[in-house]
Length: 504
Image (cartoon, rainbow, N blue to C red; front, side, top):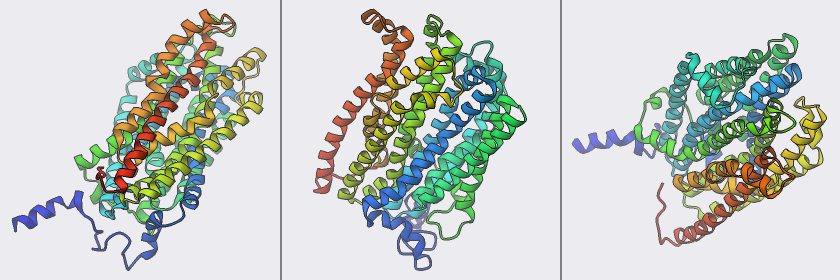
């Protein structure tokens, strides 16, 4: 009797069967539902990656488009002051994206591993605790936003000038109140892909973007509501995505994963695993936010240049947004192959794990090369979309854009490589690699190069030097990732021969 009670107490973390009593892949009532997941271990890998990658890439582009859409509408309606307000708010918005990915990607990685082991209930517990974490964190953000001092401190950290501060404050406060929609609409959306419905995952994101575009046009350009209208349009769009995601897991029939209220009970072990697996994704986005904070802080070099501090802030914001937008498709490839890597690693199909990794790297490299070519062929047109028209400012922004994205064709290797370790339950390695590109290498270079480069090459100013830091940091992080992947390939061979055991 005691033994039975102990077994029952362990069920939430160790159950290998669904509530019907049927293991994953053997549910006689709903074979179609299970086949959507089990095919990740049997179907053609290139075909699966193509199927998963196209909607994942488009989904990441759609998600990143929220920030770009804000900038475009504000730039067209308000000019440089609107762009500067969006630039100041951008690092905080990236932090919000980082939190969404911390919770969503971590929970999704755990769910994919558990599905690979045939443990559906554990995967559903991961889904439930992911939604719970999203609600709790969003409530904390909303309560913090009620205190004006909190937002003012963040704007000070983001180097808001006196002219820009009131616009950025109004924009950011509204975004904070609607954070719950982003956290679920973006983070939990990853589970839709793992449930074998990548096209549905894209549709949920597209719904939000279309709604945001329509309301941005109405609120900003037609009604003249400025930054408040843009922020409202953004959270309305994210709310539409959030509703679509929750509808899928609650009301849609024959889905491999369901959102059950009973599985939203907090499990500390599950929550800890979610956060550890998601920290690498968080580190990438948080690192991007730190870089934005640092670059905004170093806008002092713009005050020493002919374009001035406010124009430098606007130019920096445009370059950072374009750079983020070009990286998102590469992140999309990494996100797309995550459930394939996790499922096959959990099922100990090592050859499929290797093939998925190398196909993902190849796809990201091709994408990076294409975007690099587009940026170099049409830089003036791209910059002009954001409302930058002054000839001197256009020339500087184009120069900065080309320099910062110099290593773009090879960045996909680093992003996919670091994400591989997250997907296969090796969070520490993934965290280290994620930190190299944005924090360990780039931040020190951002402080050092503006002081050093003008001394070595007098034709460059301190403001110019800010952009040379990125390709140099990219090279160092790619080299580090190569070493990690070489070591990992040797480990996989030992795992395949049964010399070691996988732990996750």
